[in-house]
Each structure stands twice: as structure tokens, then as C-alpha cells.
Image (cartoon, rainbow, N blue to C red; front, side):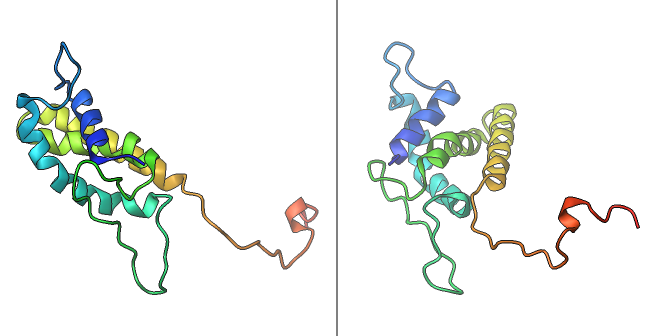
Length: 144
């Protein structure tokens, strides 16, 4: 399972904020970003949770809630695809707001695109469609 630290490091790489010689994301320059990251990730997790493989309705009529992200070392309660492919863009967008609005807008756009892809591709269970007028599905009554 992916941790908040992994998402933070991916976002720092997207933002080009890693140390050039070591490749580390945790530096004095990124400390302010890291201080803001957990709060932002906790907001993003709620947006992403309905599209996660971990989303399970256990009680009818009650919305499930993704577990709070309390630290950088515990696993995030979302599937790895969301954590590694979507959250870094959302985090980068929010961290750059007010600093570099062009980059923030780019990362926000990528976040929204990926969110739409996830929403369209969520596997769902469905009932078999019963055709009440047999034969129509094969086009036998195309002309009257």
C-alpha cells in the first residue's frame, strides 16, 4: 500500500523540487510543502474515495468514509492506482497555488483528466438486461 510519503515524493518530482545531487524530496527547501501536504491529501482522499477499489458500502444508507491520513508512514486507504497516478497531481496543484499558478493549473487539469478516466473505468456490478421482445436485438424487425 502507498504511503503519504510516496505521494509527497512523487509530487515533488512533478514539481521539480527534489535535490539535484541526491534526488531526495525531503530537503530544507521542501519542508513548507511537506507541512501542508497531509491536510491537502486528507481533502483529496474524500474526492477520490468513491473511485477506489477500497470503497465498500457496509451499511445501507450510510456513506463510507476513507480513513484519515494521520502520518507519512501509514498506508493511505485508497488503492495504489489512485495514490500513485492521481494524488501526486492534485497535491502538486494545491501546493503550487499562489506560487506558480501556471504549473498549478497544469497539474489541476491533469488531476481532473485522470479523475474522469477513473470515474469512467470503475468496474461495477450490474443486472442482466432482459429483453421483453425477443428477436429485436438481432435486427429481424428492422423494416415493417
